[in-house]
Image (cartoon, rainbow, N blue to C red):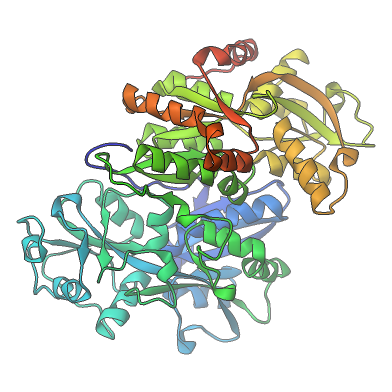
Length: 580
């Protein structure tokens, strides 16, 4: 957010709550089920330690959307995981610290898949941006108790700590003290990492710590501290001199493991798996592929201007999961870099795992702007008053359409033939949800559950296309521009002609291409400046290069009036933009 001073908050990840587990070792913890494209998938039961749960949910959701598996995730202490696997309570475990051989149990395979580091976080009112390693040790041991002793405000230091079994705490203890983390008198110990992140919203004058990956992909109302002049970047892990390294690993039975478990372990070591881990702010263990070595992210998704500015904080731009995080990073990184330079403010791309997540992020003040489609714009405008600025244009086309696709040769000739068939779409999109609602209205105002035998809601349009191509659903409503890009990609990679495999049944009216919309909290002067920057891209070489990556020739102005046809369709189908 462009403001003085910056204030950020932590964000939970969207999952589907199923039930409460009854096992003694994990009693009272939530069980999350991450389902993908099918209701009859093979289920993998996973016990996950506290500090791994957020990133593992994201990895599992992505993997499940593309494979015939479903993850049932329960949260527990890492020390309990070997026993749960040996008893058959779970099929696999995920830990966030290196388990010595005597803790791994009998006949268990232990595979590190990613590395992380610990970052120290100071409250903004502490007025400290860096510490030496010696100062950190003295604070943790209680020898330094006031921020003014390290050049900060005249306030008592409040240490936010974690329990003894916390993997980050253990890593810091080993790295800084050669063993046990010291006890301090002015310590507030919080049971879970999420409790810690929530506490950062309300407490003052604190020193806390967290995995670097959390601050890479999320924003907290804290100041990440440089240690001995070294910023807390994941590129300093694991071979660099950053104070503490965290190791994420899989555990599963060597004798009774499911094929689906070993397939998933292989995925984490594959190129796609490594790119996914890197996009979440971690260093993949396989090949030590760091964020700087991984082409799927640029500068950890954050772009700093070369000149100083009076603006403070981050300008955070959310990107919809239209093609997945890796592809979207490639498309929008150049745009974010130029915005950072021209506005003189650090700019961050934030990849959303769902379209609905963008609405929550705007509501909670965690993002300033987003590239969104028309249906999400309608919700954001009607609920929060966001303002559209500009959208990309290619060959004088700045609109997209929804299309309903089926497999060629399926014998399906019109939409009414889909009664009793399976159907996929992306919720909260004009090309997906809105188009489907309009078509169902035309076919007797029938609800989707009674019209189709099975409805699959997926995260991206590309996932929906893949489901049809693979024969996992009979039809899908998708964005035509995404489909067209996939046609070109299939051809360039030698995957065959997607056009020959797919038949288009229906085409919707046009909607404005994904536009950059901004929060009303951004001042009119800043909005005008940002729009001018976007409209000037085609005039510079760097702008042309960014437009090329985006697949556009230029940006064009975008107004609320451009969405009137979308609003008409929403009204015709009974779609409401109010809070659901």
